[in-house]
Length: 163
Image (cartoon, rainbow, N blue to C red):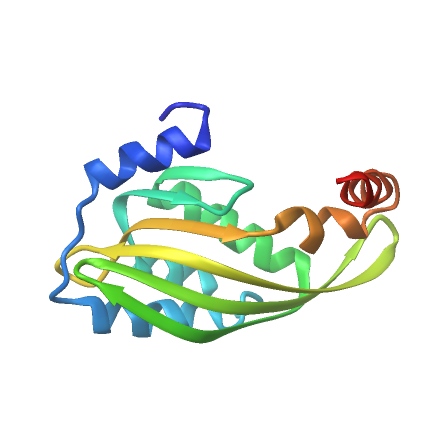
């Protein structure tokens, strides 16, 4: 995959056209898997949700192999104290699915408790078994994550003010 996330996404759109027949199954798995990222069985849920070969980008990391993604999600969940993702709207267009969501999580970072709330949108495509083959998030990770850290947060807030 190229280092430029937008180029990688465009290439993934060509590589993973998706299948509309199992969208309902896939959306149910997606909702269950993301509703609480601190679950004990998160690794199993993620392994069942995603296909072996895939494209995943959450604006911070990109993965093309399921096991790498599962490991990342489990590590993320292990670092959170609380996590809730609520699906607000689902829009379908052929094999493309767009999910509008809110995320609320609590974590201890840089020696302090952080409570973050954010909004986002995810573009999904599924294979004929309802497993995710394309997952592209669109959300403000800088404000949701980095703005809460002491030094980095100061720089993020300063950049936002100047823009």
